Length: 335
Ligand code: GN1
Ligand code: MG
Image 1 (cartoon, rainbow, N blue to C red):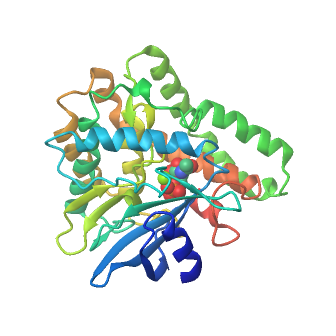
Image 2 (cartoon, rainbow, N blue to C red):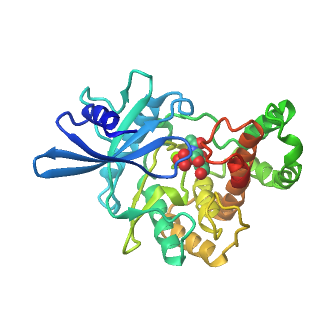
Image 3 (spheres, rainbow, N blue to C red):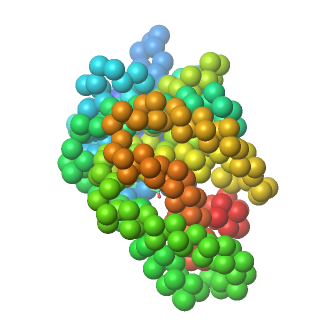
């Protein structure tokens, strides 16, 4: 994206602003994200995020934004929620999305300055900060009726269904890669019992339906660059009704290993980080978790490792149709 293109999009949100700079940012696997520096008056600059929402994945972009706005409105009304809230800007037409001539959906947010995400480099302190932030997010949304949120990605954490799709993908083998991934398939099959256990737990009614973030990875919590204090939980695209086990689990998946999701080396599994996550998350959520949630929280970590490996391997076998990739074996490496 060049400044002329960015300027045209910026006009849709802040008509009198001049685009001074545009830089691609973030490591999202689905959407395209840019930092924009905008001059909004002779001596005022605004720092913004411009993002293209992937409408091939999110087939109903307006409902994604409706969930997002419901949740941020609720968070903003909580006097004790201590973090910054990613509230979208309105377009000049008073919408949350601008649809361009090519049919792409664009949105804009304030940019949180002097922040970073702790992908692949969390120490105990950082893990605590992040887990507290995700825990506080869940706590602040405790009284929000989950059924008011749209299920924007149907069956997102229905791992049994994802297994069915995986089996179909293996059967079809359109990319001709199945022979080469026999070892990975074998290892994935060893996680099948975790998935069955989760399915049984969901059916038992012991896991209350709650507002869940569903993308609680290390890339979606912003920390202050110097103090490493948590600043904001971001990326509310997947807020939906769900179980907190998966939110805790995706933290485990992305904080406990000593390397980022994309790393080729075999990661170390860090017990001290796991403990820090669990303790800090429970500080925020322990007061309201149901007995079933509390008892099976650790299973969430296994579940999310298994489910994400399944999703990545499935996409590799299907010929890389879902996630953005930056190398031919990217999905295999992630898996
Ligand atoms: C995707 O694009 P991003 O980074 O926000 C994916 C998540 C995965 C994640 C793995 C809608 O999230 O579910 O956990 O990649 N989002 C969607 O890094 O599928
Ligand atoms: Mg996301």
